[in-house]
Picture (tube, rainbow, N blue to C red):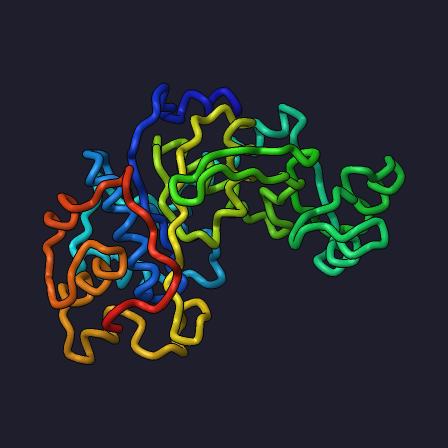
Length: 317
């Protein structure tokens, strides 16, 4: 299975700028999501690169098919297009399973029975607080007897990588040099579901994604993903983490902020072109009252010189 995974991935021997947008169909895209999608599309198209669309639908408890339909329609309405068919993670479970087998064969996995409460308690122990969400490696240090006791409990374990606090450095297009310590993060949950970090790394490798443009709330997860890409022998993409759109109260944009979706804005008398203009103005590609076409935005966008605006409300919204 490990060898099959390596043969099945289209590894890129040289850097490329193939981009992607990967929404989760658990709700309607808000204007912040649409701006991130627009930026991801511009980074790819302005560099003459393909742009892919992937639906991250592994969270079966929250995924709804009608949200996928709405999301694709909203992206098309503001003028975004993509190359090839839409890829759905739920149709790629075999590939994720092969990645786990490869990690297991390389000795990079171990089972973990810790509950969230136990992890929080360990992180705040007297030996020193750990970064939020950082796993202290409790189950990696179990004795044979302790592991046997947990196995006998019948509670299914999650699977964690054995990262041993590896230090990962990288350069983000917008944030510059970055580094982070990688904890033993989960790649398969105790309910058997594949974790986000595993699926996104395997998919980006399989699709030969060269540049990931996404919200800067995911900047801290990048060292984990780069570590995992290296263990799976995948060519890692470069990254540009863009600012989030905030509401007028300074919090992340949400339904409570009012008319925050494309449908909301249309109900208030705007067109999809108007919304695209607001998004373009917020990243410095359109003047007030201007309605540039998608092709005009591509011509104006310079990926190497783009300076992301500070997080904040969208102008005109």
